[in-house]
Image (cartoon, rainbow, N blue to C red; front, top):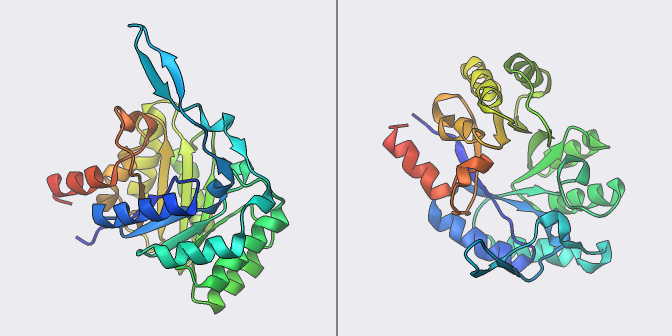
Length: 263
């Protein structure tokens, strides 16, 4: 069985960190990486000392929502794109996620679109274009002329629709030659089952899709993606305790699980 492509989403906040992560992702079995360009506008703070219940001091990173967000002018867009292109050995999905869909980009929509066009001109493999993006047609036209693949996405940071709603969403938005991506948030295992059921109903269709969620159980559709007809699975380099509670899967663990389950 030909499995889905595995994409590792890079979480660095500098070009160097992303390049280092991409090298590790390559070794770990990723087919491609996602460059979250909006994360370059985050300033990673120093870990804070926190005393646990035993009186021991541990250094803990504050939540990302508390990190300083840089000004748009703090990132040289052209130089950063060029440096990422030269330093990453894998195909790239280029993403500039807006705050409305859980991203960190501090600028206007026009400024965000300009960065997407710059990425297209640089020759990235794919770009992620949210369904909510203004000027989608112009972006897609530019991408087509440059042979850049399109991933059309919706990120619901609060809920997960029902299986029927997810199927209808895919049928409405999946276009030949593109991948439609949805990422929601599961509040319980019933939510997680909605994604699995939707994938199962769509698995024999000709539509290309990637359905997933964050939260406990959100990893089910990732782990069983090869038999659910998914075309693309997002994984992580993280390896912390109870990672599955966040709905995430380490890329090495994902590959191992597919081998174990004979996918």
